[in-house]
Length: 136
Image 1 (cartoon, rainbow, N blue to C red):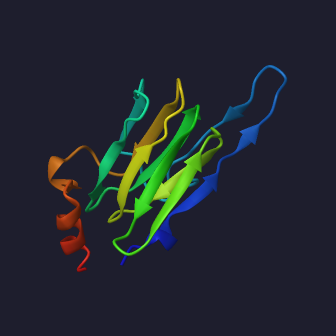
Image 2 (tube, rainbow, N blue to C red):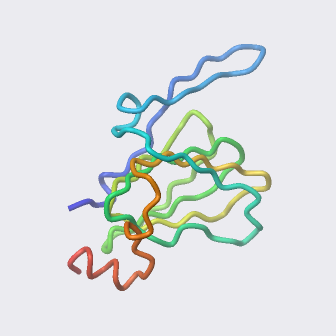
């Protein structure tokens, strides 16, 4: 069963240069899945929350490309907040965990790499249904 203990921050390669730094991420190398979808969140109004769902199959890798935000992960028993604010760190979120994103700074940009293509049937959007899914 997937728990909060399976979530981890992964440091990405970082090449510093006076002209500007460079970082990158490679599927099946830095992240433990093949990338099937990429999307990003931006222009999130102050006080708004994104996410509020879990995936049955999809795994994600979340990077704060610009600015900062919090990722709140729950496994039905425990809850943990991860603050992302560096573009050379990413958060690996396995399938089967409830997640929300909030506390977006001005001009923040969240990049999300996903292990599956978009499928509305993969989403669990009701927290009580999520608890049933987890057997709690």
